[in-house]
Length: 288
Length: 303
Image 1: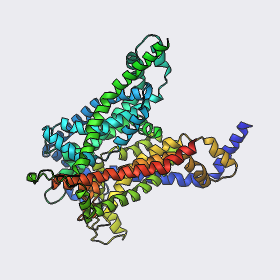
Image 2: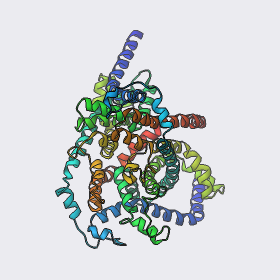
Image 3: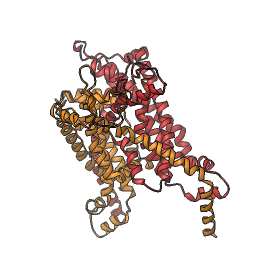
Image 4: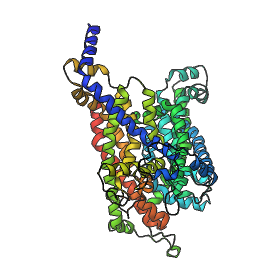
């Protein structure tokens, strides 16, 4: 009977959804094109000679040139902001994720009062508008002579990466089955030993998701880097790109080449870790 | 025995606080203390260019100045209008994209990567891209709009005070629709397909099924996605800074940008703190209203 209704439903689905089956893929294709076109156009335009950009309809790069990329690294020294961004994002991730993981494990598993309150505060703080803490952070960093230094960016970056890490990892730890660590503890392992030998290996995918998201948020951060760096030697990639306007007009060729370079690490992460990224994005939201 | 379990419990609680302490200390030091300092500074005159004035306490003086400052009032209007226009657009398009991702049978990985890319690239890059496409001289979209006759031959999107919003909103919608879609997709995947099949047997068409089954069951995910997006849109900074710089004049300037200029260019830290705390108050007020209005209805619907 069940099988019968199911085939019936299946058959009527084939019949009744015929107009829909045309509309949906077409709308989908349109939406996909809208998502991908700007990125393809960025790539194409970055390979065109500057003069072609001003022509009426330069849809495809008929004359390919790497001139903008050469200028970017030879004249603009774009390796410096790349190094700065990698260092600051990497350091922030290395500091935030382990500390957040310990906190998240306690919040997910251990008996303590006020857990809900702590978690609610963490979520609320991760929603703080960055501009609201720029003035005191600027004054404090100036006082400590940390403006225009790497620690002077890592510290402000902890304001969003630490709450983010705690929130995501608490979600991931809660998804793990309790049995294994309880079994380990019955066998005489201490809580910390169970955490190290049983829980952390199991939570590795969640920790990877958290690290990837943290790195991405740091790589993309703009306002703090704009406020707390003072010169090209410490600019991060987003700040460097934004500030290299020409004197009279925007040097679009080089700007586009720089946006492509800034996108490459992000694109590689997305290609390699799409599942982990989606897991990270959804674990936070579904717990809320 | 009883005494033993109690002490084990106490040891566990102690361990819990020990594990929580470092992260909490960092959060308190780098987030909570600074926001309190901003709030305190907002009650003072504090001008880095006029250090001989000291930092006299003036109570609500900075906020009174803000209320009477037409540029701040305009910025407030811009911020709220931007959020109210772009977030609903993102929710509708994101729902469409989510349904598509959900029903895609082939090329799922490709679709997912295409959706994740705009979300993952730096906001600054997205901003420059859309600025480039709307640029009067080099922009492919600006040229298309001219060819289609939507705008005159000499139209410059960044000179017109209202038109300049379009590239900002387009960039935001383009960049964050995929984020909304991914949140909603997670919600879609929890809906039991049997419900749809049953409704279909009862004769409900696909449109009706979508509005009577999918949308109501997706409501919790929609509420969460809307909250995330609103809180983000209300602190709009990067896009406005890069796409238009707040211009022409200050026609596209949100509160965050006005506060940034007041702080970092005019060095008026007292007034700038007051402006930047209003962004915090704005998001806080929204969060309160949202939880009050929808938090209850949601938990009510669940129980």
